Structures are given as structure tokens and as C-alpha cells.
Image (tube, rainbow, N blue to C red; front, side):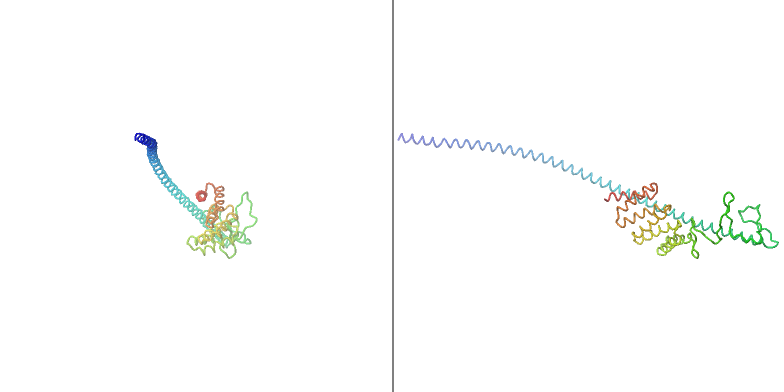
Length: 324
């Protein structure tokens, strides 16, 4: 019995010893796991706090970017509005200058007609004076207003026909080689009047009046007559310019550009050249020939930098550059 008890006690001791060791390892493992869990929790909490701070910073940065974007958009709108206002004023100024040039052309044409009328009246007065003076017993006729009162109108010899026009006065006592007849009218720069046709001034004035009245078809025919009948007159260059304007109104930019080219190429001294080059660029833009239009605008700015048309060209060139 004693031996059995001893063996049983030994077995119990042997069985109990590994169980105690196993429980100790488990406790250590559980402690380590708990420590790791605590560490992970602390790291998670720290990461959450940092993520919260980052989210706040991102939110604040996003708000600042949105405010800056809104401010930039507002600034761009303001600049565009100012530029459009400047462009509109420049276009208005260009139109006003063009109208002024047209009015000057009209006044020149009227002055030319008045000068011719005065010359014709003076010629007729001299002819009447000569005829009256040649009559037997006739008294000298008083000189017209503005003439030298100390010099009476003398009668020409009977064999000499009465003069038909006022004699030309040349420097140093020179006399003209040949004098045209009184009814031989000339247009500016020696463009002779076509027999049976109106003078270039009259024809141009009629065409310009119809253009201003909105009679584009009739005005186009009359401007074509000016260019065809009087190709050497400066008014022919103006006629080609207004033909281009009429074609632009008719939505024919290709044909309009050709008319503006005639002004630029055939009439180098014409006062319509800056406007013709600007309007040619407009016609090219209407044809979507942006590069060609930009070249015309740059050429206009280089040739006439101080003209109102050059200011308009700069605005249009900036718009083309931004659109690219």
C-alpha cells in the first residue's frame, strides 16, 4: 500500500509539473499579447489624432484654394470686361475717325464742285464782258466783286475771239503751253472726265450718299463705276474700300478681302489704307484664317503705330493670342 501511494504521488507530481509550466507560458503570452494590443491601440489613437489634424489642414488648404480660385475668376472677369470696354471704345473711335475721313472726302468733293462752278461763272462773266465791250459805243463793264477795280475790262480786238476761261497765272511770267476748253472738266490728279458721264466727284458723292442711305446694291454699282471710269483717281481707292464694306455686310468676306487688297496694292497714298488693312484682317477672321489675320494686324501696327486702327489691331491681336 505504501509503495502504491508513493508511486501515485510521483505520478501526480510528474503530471502536475508540465501543466504548471504550460500555464506559466500561456500567461506570459497573454501578457505580451495584451501589451501589443495596448501598443497598437495607442498607435491607432495617435494616427487618428494625426489624421484629424491632416484632415483639418487639407480642409483649410482646400478652402484657401477655392477662395483664391474665386478671386482669380473675379479678376479675370474684371480684366475681360475692362478689355472689352477698351476694345469697344477703340472700335467706336475707329468708326468716328473713319466717319471724319468720309466727311472730309465729301467736303473735298463739294469744294471741287464749287471751285469748278466758280471758274465756270467767272469764265462766263468774262465772256459776257468781252462781248459787251466789243459792241459799238459800249461802256466798259465793271469788274466782278473781288477783281481789281483800277483795271477796267478792255475790249479785245475784233479778230480775237472772246476768252473762254480765266487765263492761268504762272510764276515768273510764264504762259501755259496749252489751255483746255472751258467745258473740259478734270478730276483730281489729272483723271479726265469721261464725255457724257458725271465727273468722278459727282459719281462718288452719289455712291457715298446711297451707301449711307443703306442702298447697298445701288451704291455698289456706283462705286464700281467710279473705279471703272476713273481708275487713276484717289476716289477710286475709296470706292474699292466701300465695295469691301458692302461685301462684308453681304457676308462675303472673301470678295471683301480682295477689294481691300486693291486699296492696299493700287493706292499706296490713300487715307483709307489703315482702315482697309484692319477690315481685311476682320474679313480673314470671318474666313477663319487666323494666322493670315494676325499677320495683317502686326503689319498694320508696324506701319501705322499711332493710328486708331493700330490700337484696335493690338486689341484683336491680344484676343487671338489668348485664344490659342
